[in-house]
Image 1 (tube, rainbow, N blue to C red):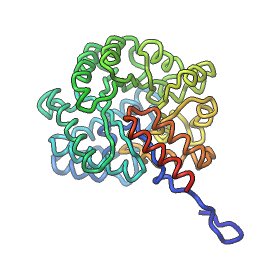
Image 2 (image 1 turned 135 degrees about the horizontal axis):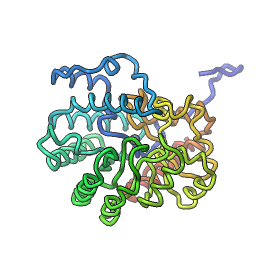
Image 3 (image 1 turned 180 degrees about the horizontal axis):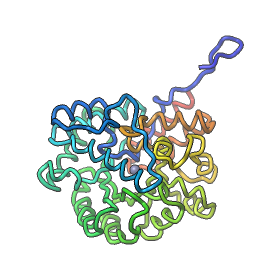
Image 4 (image 1 turned 120 degrees about the horizontal axis):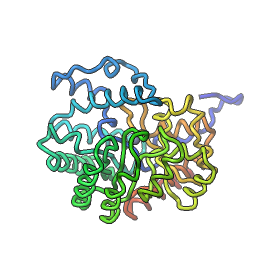
Length: 347
Ligand SMILES: [Zn+2]
């Protein structure tokens, strides 16, 4: 911390105490690195070297090969989650980490299809996950819900099946429906039926867009999937008209700056267009995406905004408010978090 000439350090508010909502966190990607090592040993899984080092892996996903490598590491980590106990541990620790970072509401994103083979099928896998979320939420006091995410590398019919399942389990803690994986593959509109099922079932539509692909991919999410939130969406910054549209409709972008830099979407933290979105009035919810692979969690995203983009505490508080407003949290949780944000800023 720099010391002023008078010898008094400037007062800096602690960002881990700023109440916030975390809307972009993937299931396996939320795992603690130490837990991954434990589980790999427990199940006799040989992990790639990139996952066993002290540093997060070096990634560059701006081309298909780089993205494939990222997915392969993700798959290797996921293959260590084999029992209901593993799932419970993952979710409890994700909740603990979020609480430590000042999160008061977490929406965790999962494609249960990926866990189905080892957990007895799609429905058992989903039930194990939802039970784990419910227990972790009760144990830690953190409000938690689930986004079921379809994989755009798979057939759109699989996405429809998942959407129906997500709607059926809505009262067990599912609040939204997403679409993840390589935005350069397939068209958003191939998944329009799945999203219609989800929206008609009362789920919020939160597909990934505007990360690996440009503004057109965000537009597709709005036009074809009627998205009410965008996973990432940062590359909307390249198009002023799109920014205005997002701002006018108050579509929250789940912006994950550390992820963007780790995957090479932007070269340096200062290149992530946080200011552009903020000044355009586009609501953002900063998120960690896959801390296991990118090496930083929720509060670090706010630190990055402060350190590399000069966000003042008042602006950081506004970012936190935007995350809460963009969430599916019930009114009492929102009010508590918004009150906490005001108190943080006043304190
Ligand atoms: Zn993501």
